[in-house]
Length: 184
Image (tube, rainbow, N blue to C red; front, side, top):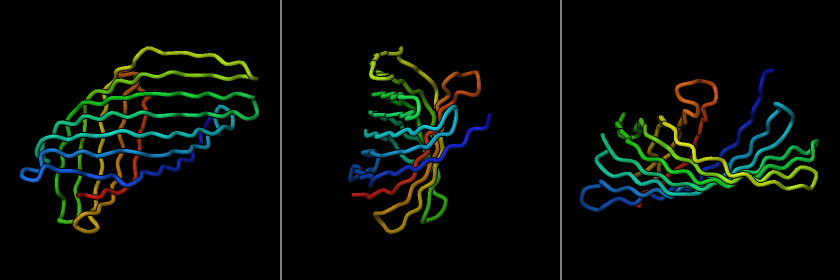
């Protein structure tokens, strides 16, 4: 059965702080909202609000990357009387390499490991159940682009793949992003 997914993602402004003398420390608050209309296995919607912080340390060509996010997911199957809520925390630790393509743009690659802890609440016809799956640890890799609009503003777009059943294929999670940053 084919799966059709519509995704609308908003990333709110990211503020980037850098150490004045060496630009080796960058702190980026992350916040976003995603709403997905899914058609498979049945018609349902999924909303996701997430927030956190990403820290980069080192020169752009080779930086250490640490990221922590919290998310609140709500999946609603209206025709089945089913509601699934998931509160999760995710930490990433890895490396990032950024390469300036022009004076107006740069390209980055990132890779590392991620750990995710979650609590899932399922409500079916008014009956609620709670589950706490084991902490999942998986590798990730990603890429993205940044286009400078002015000296302090940039548009960003990227994709990160979390290899959920590594080395098996098929259950990978794709995290796409679109947003802009303000450097202070």
